[in-house]
Amino acid sequence: VSVASSEDLDDATLAARAVTEPELFTVLFRRHVADVHRLIRRRTGSDALADDLTALTFERCWSALPRFEPTRSSLRPWLFRIATHAVASHYRSEGRRQRREHLAAAREVPMTVNESTSSDPPGEWALLVALSMLGERHQQVLSLRFLADLTTDEAAEAMQVSRNHFAVLQYRALTALRHSLGQLEGETT
Amino acid sequence: MNDRPDVLSRLEQLGRRQPSTLTEDRLASIELRVMTATLQQTDPSRSWSRRAMPIVVSAAAALVLFVVVFAATDRSNGDVTVSSADGVVLEFPDGSTVDAQSGDAVPEGVVIRVTGEVVVGSDRFGPGRYRVVAGDLEPIVSVDSSTSTSTVAVTVPTDTSSTPIRTTTTTTNVTTTTRPPTTTTAPTRIVRQPVRTTTTMPTSTMPTSTMPTTSVVDATVPTRPTTTTTVQARPTTTTSTTPTTTRRAGP
Image (tube, rainbow over all chains, first blue to last red; front, side):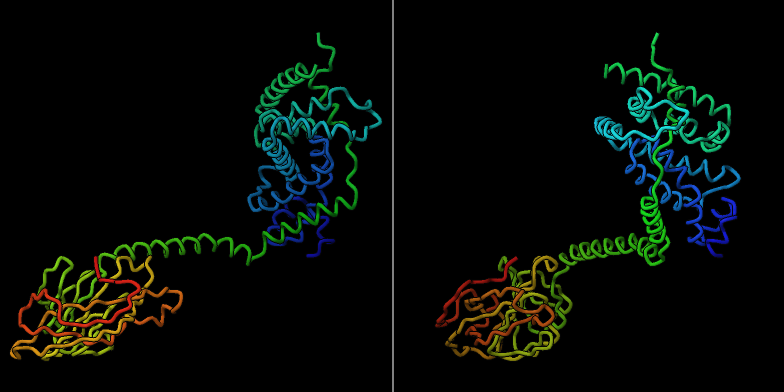
């Protein structure tokens, strides 16, 4: 099966066949790399780090592909979950000071702003730092819900929890973020 | 009241922001990395080596453990077994002597004194010569009794695994004056060992596979004029020796 002829296949089929036909994984990669990179870029604020973590996400995706179950989750939310896990793992391996320095450096290169949004929202740097200081599960919930362009149902599917459970997790994550952000901004002011 | 926007609205605002688009060259770089990693993971030889590595390491560890245990066990059994005990006397380091029986184990440091001719390993030697044995020892396979006397000094290394096999070479020129025995009915069974000067050669100078287990000393063994089996007096020997080290088989 050529790569060109497999463009029309859905994610589940591609994922199942890519296990034995690695060239089909290229199709999956090209189909989702932009979304994954955008999510990671929003979380990290750095193009270079986003490139690294995007590559890492797809490498882990390839390793875990035999365990992917299309009946439990779609590929895209599953992929986003791997991406948020990669980001959380990266921040966990960094110290708090390194994390701040890294995000501070990333702050120097502002993102391209949508026409509908104002330029450079206040406290974006503090928000990213506070987000990176949360527990991994809270990071994943907030990233999937607000930074990955997923609906609540899709985010719950990615976390493999029910919608209600996800709502509870989101509430707790927001509370934790609010607390972390308050501490951080209290320190900086 | 905090004038900053709420966390929720700030998150939503962050989610609406569009990062810089992924350029083609960066995309190609990411794809190259991913596909390289993918191919490495699917490489059967790589996966085989990855699976085989623990087995190889385990086997090597087991081999090392076996060698260590075997050496420790072998140390206690590093004796020479007497195959033929006709006319063989064992002299222990404490001075006691005993007639060897066939199958006796000869512990380290024991001097084997042989009457007549003896075959040690593939070497036969007999009257008028004695042999210094060092390193791996072979059992005495036959003894040909005669009126002459030979001495076999056995030195068993204490640790054959860690201590390299030493080749003991006697560099002494021994000139002996042998007095004829006063009686011929009973051969002298114990002979004082002449002063031996030995030089221990480093193992590296000789391959282990070609190292002899015994080294022959061309020397005339003095005989005692009496039939006593525990003669302590030295024979009348005139020895011109230039020793470098004096080595005596000991425990």
